Amino acid sequence: MQNLTAYELAQRIAAREVSAREAAEVANARVEEVEEDVNAFVTTTPELALERAGRVDGRLQGGENGGVRLWETVPTTVKDVLSTRGVRTTCGSRILEDFTPLYDASALLNFGEDLVMVGKANMDEFAMGSSTENSAYRPTRNPWGLGRVPGGSSGGSAAAVAAGEGWWALGTDTGGSVRQPAALCGIVGLKPTYGRVSRHGLIAFGSSLDVIGPMTRDVRDAALLLQAIAGHDPHDSTSANVEVPDYLAELENGVEGLRIGLVTELMDERIDAGVREIVADVANSLEAAGAEVGEASLPHAYYALEAYYIIAPAEVSSNLARFDGVRYGLRVSADGVHEMYRKTREEGFGDEAKRRIMLGTYALSAGYYDAYYAQAQKVRTKIIEDFRAALHRYDVLLSPTSPSVAFELGSKTGDPLAMYLQDICAVPASLAGIPAISVPGGLSDGLPVGVQLMSDHFTEPLLLRAARAAEQVADFEFTLKP
Image (cartoon, rainbow, N blue to C red; front, side, top):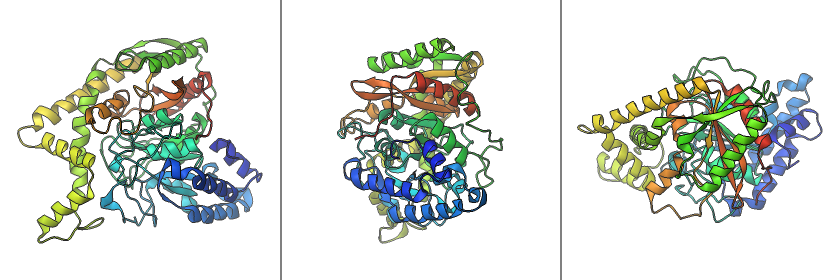
């Protein structure tokens, strides 16, 4: 059972070959076996998983499977930035260490009352980071090498999937936080179109950038999990009222006749040679499979990182202002309300959160708004125009997901700029709001390399079709680690 994909497991549960409770027991046992080494979770919920799986089994006994949808039967890991009713939600921060939400995030509601949740995954504090070393609790370790980072900020979700602590997970992607850890851990990570999945109940980092996305063993699993979470939500004003297609329907149609553009700006010397080689190999294999492959240009991609690290911290400065010790979360006693604010935020936030709050506040301050924030938004518009032009010529764009394989724990923590550079391949799609997916392309120095595919807004069926073909031509096979 442990070596099945989530889709295969769900099919077997639906056919009564195994039970949802048995699957939950397998997931719980695997967590107990490897969690001490991997540290993928902030909170584990083994009893809750068994209880809910039992209820799913009870519903399956009813006529027509009791109305149970395929995805409801699979044990799931949830990033600790998504609100879960009755289960603490920390965002990887001390300031929310004892916070327990009163409602579930809307993205979880299609699982109904019986979401078989294995636990809440560790993460960089408030999703700020590329290595999951910024968690207030402990760093997560990459199952491919316990001395290496799993990527971030959804590193706990990625590590849990790679280690078999459940079959799939939900992460969030603001500037690559689903795709980059997926690449480093050898799994699939999908960032849907901005607005495709409701953000209601997602504790905000960058409100114009945040997207909830699947992290899975293969592309078919990603399509199924997207089916579960996509859709319009009246509770979220940025949720798009666009029909949700069947994401599995065209999955196996191959790339015959598709136009694929290899992004030249993301294949330069900033990218490790081993990574570039694997991306080029996948491009060649897709061409051999019938796709038309050429070079695509995103001229303003060189400025994407700088623009992102002005826009995102500006939104952080606004969003994190609500954590003041008054209504919820940590409160540090002090003489006077202003001193209470100061001490609560000083003790509750970690270094990276403080750094980004200060960067964002500075960029938005009088005298600097036009020089920094307004200019960054103009760059964002140029990047959107670049994608529009490239996607007029090509159906799908191809690039590395991350400039390197998983690096050693602690190797970049003393140099924030070096850490930020890990996002250079991922942030352009985030700024444009388009869907993007990372699939494993092969190994470099024995570690996974992610290949990123990008397409136009709300064209996830096309993107998933191309990604399915890419994973089938790649020199990689999912295996449980460690």
